[in-house]
Image (cartoon, rainbow, N blue to C red; front, side, top):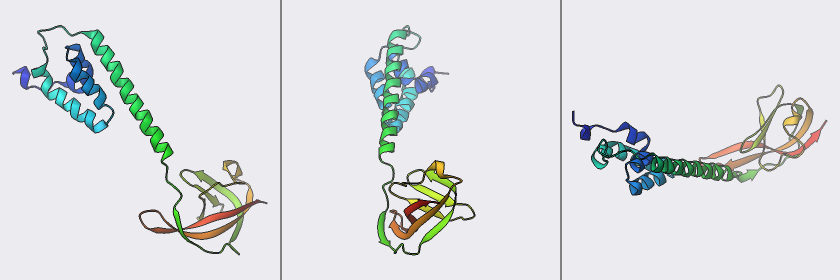
Length: 180
């Protein structure tokens, strides 16, 4: 079977290093920088797998390990830096507090109980023992934290309607916290 028509799996999995090892440094760097965008990296690696047997002197020229290792290290550094930057961006763009459309009076909206769960993701929520209701803190939950689980509190709350971008929802939002 003609090797020029076969898919080259080494070139697919190690495109930048494979091309650098056979002296195609320019294309190797393009493949390495394609690692910044995962979809571009996939397209570049598929291209390398399809074209490597036609574009590279496989079998007729020795593979050069030093350029291959250098470009592979560069590709790993580029991909790691890109992944780290994306992770930091996602941390800094966590969900903003929902836009409050309306808020009812908090007078008389008081609940007392033992904190069964305290969870802080994008927003903090509190659940009391014996209840399925969640009470939310969109700003700071001052006076209550993970250490509050198992302790008794009085929570003053107000019902708020918020627009989360996909529709309106109602939340019981903590207005005051008092340890008992």
